[in-house]
Amino acid sequence: MSSGKELAERVGVEIQKGDRYSFHRTRRVRRSKGESSYEEAAVLTTKHKNTITKVILLDRRVEKVRHNTRPVKNEIAHFSHRHALHRYKMLEEDQVQCDICETDIVGKAWGCQDCEFFIHKSCKDVPREIKHKSHRGETLTLRSSTRYESGEFRCNACLGLGEGFHYHCCPCKFDLHVACAGTPYIVYYEKHKKPLTLCYDFPIETSRTVYCKVCDSKISKNGWAYYNKDSHFIAHIYCAFDNEEKDSILVIQDRLQSLQMK
Image: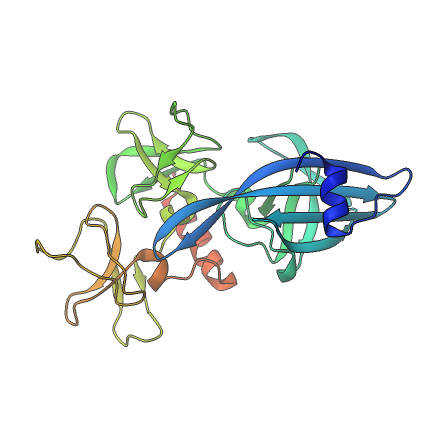
């Protein structure tokens, strides 16, 4: 795939006279069984009058086509982005991810269409500095990108790699995804009656391999886990707590506000 026109022909998008269009490659985060990964994608965006059409092609298949009208004139500035952010309202089928917490946006959002940068309306107020129980004594600072030579950081909670927004402690080289930093201390998993407690150190003393009770895959002893000591129920943090549910995103944001530096 060498150009936007070629992509348009492949997916049946007609570029009309006077249309503006752009083409770029991007990476999208995927979380599965407690692990984070990135998927390469080709993105074509066309603009015609008041209609914006975006096509994302993943692994030689079309994932979606969506149409957005122009945003209303209200705009804000965000420390991480050089352009003003406008208001949008995202639908579930849009499958747009928040660049800050990396979860799906459904409802009100702020964004820059030209840069493909979108955030939840409430994520614009995510604290710039927090204190977290998992990292005593040092302040964690919100960064929009990593300064490691590799261009990636490894989250100390889920052990997944990341490139974008995260909380960072420079002296300790300690990093957390924004969503991981906001993970609640106590959760109730739907198929388990007793509460699960978030453990920053592995809660089971054993030399054997330990498996998640939800997805039945291995749990690393270097990351966080949810655990109930009475039932010995243990799970990956994103198996026990679904951070893609709308209510769960609000829980994450409330948790981050409680960790904010006063």
